[in-house]
Image (cartoon, rainbow, N blue to C red; front, side):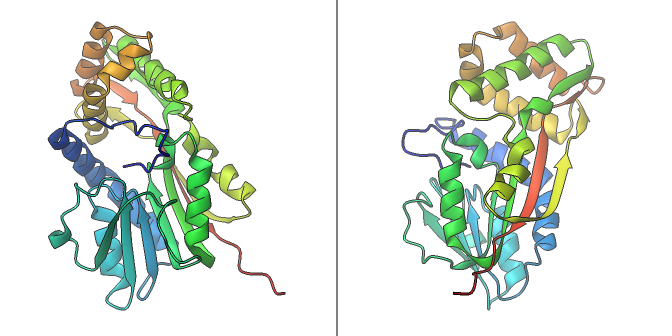
Amino acid sequence: MSIPMAEDSYTFAGSERARELERLRRIEGFFDPASWRLLKASGMGPGWSCLEVGAGAGSIASWMAERVGQEGEVVAVDLDVGFMDASQLPGVRIIEGDIRRLDFHAARFDLVHARYVLIHNAHFQDLLDAMLAALKPGGRLVLEEPDFTAARGASGPDIAAFDRVNQAILAMFQAEGKDPGLGLRLPAILASRGLAIEAVENEVPLCPGGHPLSEIMSLSATQLQDKYLATGRISAEDLAGYARFAADPAAWGIYYGTVGVVARKPAKTAD
C-alpha cells in the first residue's frame, strides 16, 4: 500500500477489494522472505520500537511483533487499514492515516520500514522527511522499492505484447509524476540525505509464466488495465498477450527488479 499526498493518487486506488487483498497476499507470500532478510540485517531484535509504513495486509508488522517481543513495540500505519485483521496481529498497534499528518513523537522509533510505498508517491521526498523525523538518531531505515525499468521479455510467442505493456507501465508512472525506476536510485537518494548505507540488495528475477511474480503482475494488469490503455501505448490485444505471456510456462521475462536498502540515521552530534 502507499501513503500518497492528498493531491496524489495511489496507483491501485479504486481496485475491487477482494482482488486487491488477493494481490497483497500474493506479494506477501513472495516478497516477505527478502524483507525478513533485510530487517534481520538491520539488527532488529527484542525490545526495539518499529514503525511499518504502508502496512498493507499486515504480514511484516506481524513478523516484527514476534521478533521484538512483549518488551518491544510495533506500529502499523496505512491510509486504508481495512486489509488488516487486528485479531490476527497481536502486539501490533494499527493506525489509519498519513504518516506526515500523524502526531508521532519525534525520534521515537529504532526502525522504520516500508515496502513499495515511495514508488506510488510523486512527492516521495516528503514521505522520507516524515520517516526520518520518526526515527531515533542511529536508528535504521529499511526501504524496498521496485525498478520497473528493468523489465524485458526473454522468450515466448507474446514477447512483443509483453514488452509493449512494460512500456505502458513506465508511461503510466511518468504521467502521474512518479519515478518507475525509483528503486535503482534509492541508495543514492538515501546517501544524499546523510544516511550511512549498510546493506543493498538488488533482486531481478527472471520468471517463467505461472511463477508467483508473473501471477502478481498479471493481477496488477487486470486491475490497472484502464490506466495502461490510457497511455496510448498499447491495445486491448496487447493486454491479452501480456496475460498469455504471464501464464505460459515457456515464456520467460523480467517483470521488475526490487532494490532493498538498510540505512542508518546519523547519531546526534555533540553540542
